[in-house]
Image (cartoon, rainbow over all chains, first blue to last red; front, side, top):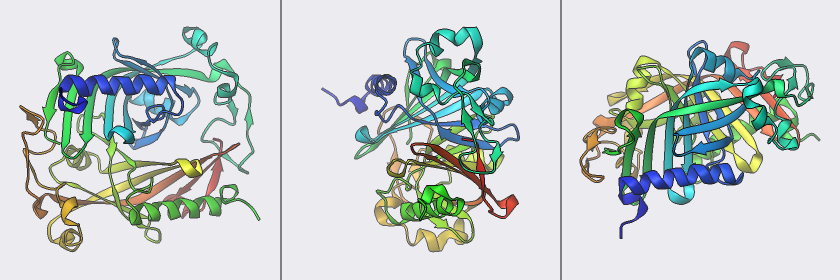
Length: 185
Length: 185
């Protein structure tokens, strides 16, 4: 019996298991990856987001964001993202690249309906996120679905690294119909 | 007496304290940020790196990498990075954007001399990192300074978010001579 990290299938299955656990459990390390985008002016950017859906069959990840946040302007200019997850307990790095569709309004009303009241505080802030303010707390939160956007991320590339006693690295791409291959780490 | 996260100076000082602790202590959460770059083909990328120097006075961060890794090709095309740190214990997100210079050879021989033998395993792998291989372990490590590169990152922008009971966000930029300002979070 091989360990999960010794086979391409084992690695891939474990990565998706982690992504699904991140959606289910807000304290799981896969819940809050780093999300990298490219700004309008061509700078890389990275910040924490929360994963809200991981669809293994469709190869899709969802994150939620304020439509007025910086990252929306970036994604309108460059509709591509990279997610970076690190699962310390497994010594597993998960890197995901995806094309992004920004969903708002009636398309996501059913998702907004499921956002718990405390989490709604993240959508609808005045002035908009990133605007200079005279004092740290000179802003008002007024939760509103108008500010709610879903980033639907269609995965094109998954790169997995297991940093065990030896290092193993594999990639899985849409272009190869998700058939994995080992890479030099 | 205010809390550290209540003033611009307090936030900024704490962020640099964390970066310095990351350099000093390999188990500190600031040791291993996510590093975002832009690939030659215009995709955002993100992966874990280790911070090896944090120079508060010069506003510089160093990371080390294999000169043959994917990120070097990306940085030659787009010499800009974003670092993303999350210090769970402090509920502090540190985002750093920097211009990158790639240093190799005699310029970094004095730094290579200080790299511990086990860490040298990360530099000098055949085939090069990211090359497909027939089996997970079909690679050879042969530590060599020829493969050793220092990413010297001249910081242009620092964005700090404290996710406490209330959220506070501030930015500090080279363009404003590091005088901070509060932002709507």
